[in-house]
Image 1 (tube, rainbow, N blue to C red):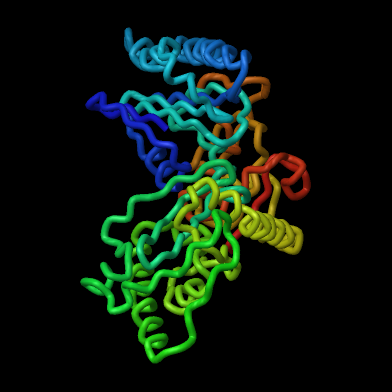
Image 2 (image 1 turned 90 degrees about the vertical axis):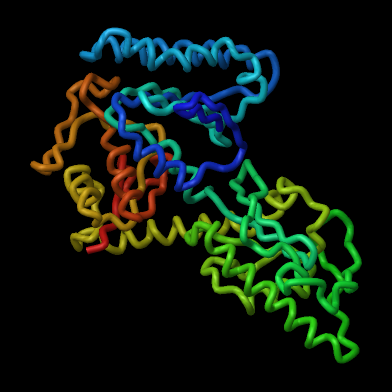
Length: 396
């Protein structure tokens, strides 16, 4: 991600996109809001197509801005930083699978995403965010908590990305948690090979074992409490570490989504990417099971007034905070307008492209569900219950 602030300070990070990022994008006050999505080619001669494709999408944004009653020079100012990317070789040197760009009078952000995206360029009164919801659920985010008496680490990951997070205020070692050197600081489990596998368990002889376990639990309890400030509580956590540490952390933990299965083995020498690849085998079935359960619940409730695939019912319910779970079709748009005061939906007659004043109503339903703490699954249309453009389970 690259972020251009109002002070023209450029920063970048490869961390997975988060709920907080989407919330930030939804709070941008200025209008109009430009959203651009495109797939990007990672390697080979075809990478030269990336800036060409981007330039064509810029042309689409420019055409939409020209059709709006904007003060002179506004369109050029909005597009200037996007055009600047075309002349920035470093920007195109390390592409991801997809690119998302957001621009308003107050904000300019670019995200390299681990997700192939359909080409889309829209101008609306807020940013178009539906394509991002695929990264928040289903095949979305998870944490890996690498346990060690010397260096506790937290990795935020998706299927295709991983980043070790800074942990201010979190004790990183047993000695730090206890305010000095532990009496058992000399205890070091023998490292295993550079794979996640079985490791030596805690020695069972001598009177010091129970005391050491007590100190470790105190360390983990303190870390768990501090970690709560850094974690999204809805995101699953996979524990990794030498085998005897995993049950000790589970005994001490209060975080709600620590998974039963972990990665036993010495994790100290493993990179975030290596831990992600192994942890994915644990979290993938969890994600899929949650989505299947949500789809089953939809079919159970159809016909009771608690579920619907009709946009005329879903959009008002999403605004009212009634949508508990929403499935929206990835790559599908439903152009139109929604009058929240009149609770009226009007579809655009020509659905081939966005017209001035229209928006993607699937995106609006997804955003309103997200803002009201519902779950959004952005999936291929064939995976939406009933095969419609969207389907929802209502809270009441």
